[in-house]
Length: 115
Length: 110
Image 1 (cartoon, each protein chain N blue to C red):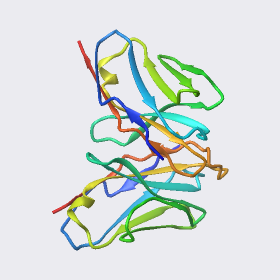
Image 2: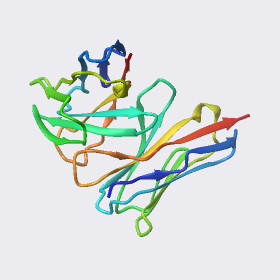
Image 3: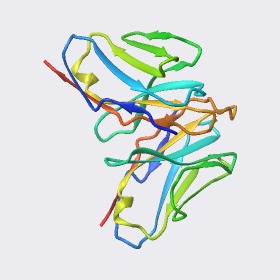
Image 4: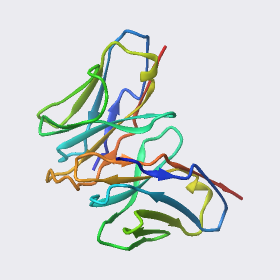
């Protein structure tokens, strides 16, 4: 089975712009979670989608949003970019059952640099 | 609160055992995980342990769980240079998200 794929792998934007990142989960997985990784804050949970519905959301401002499509692919969007949004954004997929205990498998990440 | 702690660095000689420690806070966590991150890469799931287990062994990896003290450890036997990476423990409380530790950078020297 193919793993979790994320596109693009690298992205450079300027302050004030917006960005959309994409994640394709492992075939058959229905849950997609997004995490932000920075040197200062470590790995922080952004949000999780299951069957096109957001089930849980972390403590990020409303500039961070996401969605999930019927084929389980997910996108996250960050509007009005700030320098502090520079990070590695990781997507994880899990679960064919929708159980909260399903193991999460991560993609390689998208490295976003905001100038 | 949600706080998973790990020591930041560990340096070991090739062939020795490495032990990476983690303390977590949420006793309701059903599963506890260990992930590995190599430079420029995402997170690779190494192993996990169910909360009603004390120990799990998987080839060179041994996970020990002390639920009373909320302490988790990962032992890597016969550590190799290819094991050099950052290791994250993570807990999974009864929500659909992982709470990660700060990560331990393991450096293996010849």
